Amino acid sequence: MRDLLVAAAIGVAFGWTLERAGLGDPPKLAGQFYLRDFTVLKVMMSALVTAMLGAFWLDRLGVVDLGKVYVPETVLLPQLVGGLVFGFGFVLSGLCPGTSCVALASGRGEGAATVLGLLVGMLLMGLAFPSLEAFYGATPIGAMTLPRLTGLPYGVVVAGITVACVGLLAAIGRWEARR
Amino acid sequence: MSTTRRLGLGALALGLLAPFAGSPHRAVSGALDFDAIARAIDDGSDHVSARQLGTWIRARKPGLRVVDVRDAKAFAEDAIPTAENLPIDRLVSTAFKPGETVVLYSQEGAHAGQAWVLLKALGVTDVVFVPGGLADWWEEVMTPVLPADMLAADRDAAADLSRYFGGFPQVGVANGEPVTPKTYRRRGC
Amino acid sequence: MTPRPYADPYLAGVGLGLVLLACFALSGQGLGASGAFASAASHVAGVVSKNAWVEGYLHGGSWMLVEVGGLIVGAGLSAWLAGRLAVSNAPSGRFAASLTGGILMGVGAALARGCTSGLALSGGALLGVGAWVFMIALFAAGFLAAPLLRRLWA
Image (cartoon, rainbow over all chains, first blue to last red; front, side, top):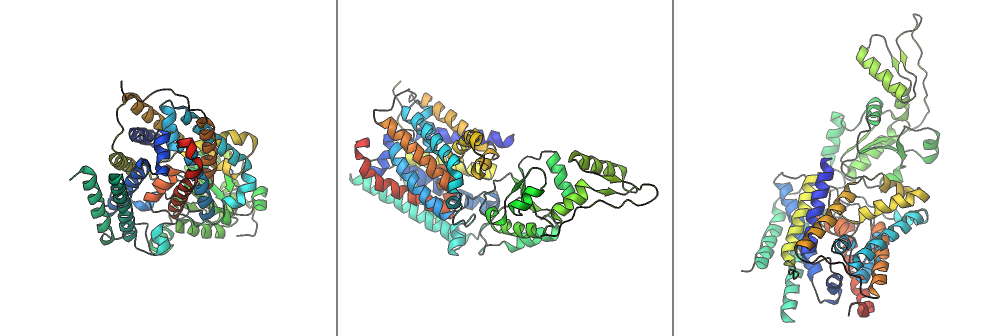
């Protein structure tokens, strides 16, 4: 029960934040891929770095045990292909699963259409699964993390990603200033 | 200095300090967290008895996942109630969510123990196995022999659990002679 | 009421990161969205075909569904308070594109076991390899496909 209350609270905060950033507006999201509107990258990179640094430091301070947090498993081929297919769909809709719900909640027709499409796409996958099972389970390497894969210490990878993301956001800032 | 700038610099500071802060629990340089696994084996938190599993199933423990790691044919012939069949090659590519308690079993426990180590190496935290496997299930739950000198409360609980699963508990001594247990044992791993 | 302007993306991003962090701390997992769609779809597919994928989501619990329910409530509340709540039809041509995009994302998210929030963001913050692979692939595909869809977003 407590789990579900937490889920609901997190969901509300999540939806609120996405809507505040304007991520329920398809032209805004699609604009990222035309380098017109960098909101998507700004929000994603800031969120990722914040959560990554927060999780790392809370673990070091003993508040959170990172070992107990669920890391999504890595299945290389399906996630690579899935990412490519997903990206194409993303530019078509100008929305992703989370933001399609934001658009829907704001009353946008595109939101409803994307949500419907998502359900249909998932349904097709569920029905076709037996024929896809082999590909779906190809190249699993478990809950692999970048530090374990590269052999670099966790903190070094955290530093690297922070520098890369902050650098990217700084570059975006300079690009926008010049336009 | 703008807020954005300050946030960026703050992030850089926290990020660049990270390599000097040591490694989080999970990030052991190798696939196995030897210490944690060795500790679990030592203190016995790596396994549960078949009877304990039976109580969990009966109580509908939330998040319980009973996993049979044998092949499909063996699973079809006989299995623990509510079990799902995940042979080891499929097991390692299954993602278990937090809040799920995974209980592994095999015919006699050896394969389940191996699967346990694999899942621990893959980062699954809440996983145990039944050391005697399906054979223990039959011995402890389905056809347990409950001697008369056992504590009445324990005996009744065990007999009750057995009957819940449709088993045949043998309580006490019959006609002055010890009752030979009906066992169901198959050679296997 | 004239719609309020959107929040600063960096502040919103940090806010989102803090929500995600709270999620890690309070529930031991990241947040997500596609899982709810998979769960819903598995209930329908399960009527016709019981396979490993369907079974997995049928027995996967309702955490994600509840979270996405909250998402809709939170987004609706924010939109309403900001004067951005308005029922509108998709511009012509965009409905079909949105629907198709949704289908493709449904397929992609099913294959990847997640989407931008559940896999890329949550998994990425935890340095998951698959998360980064997925994230790079999706942005690459988006940028490559964009020139083909220029007329859609003119």
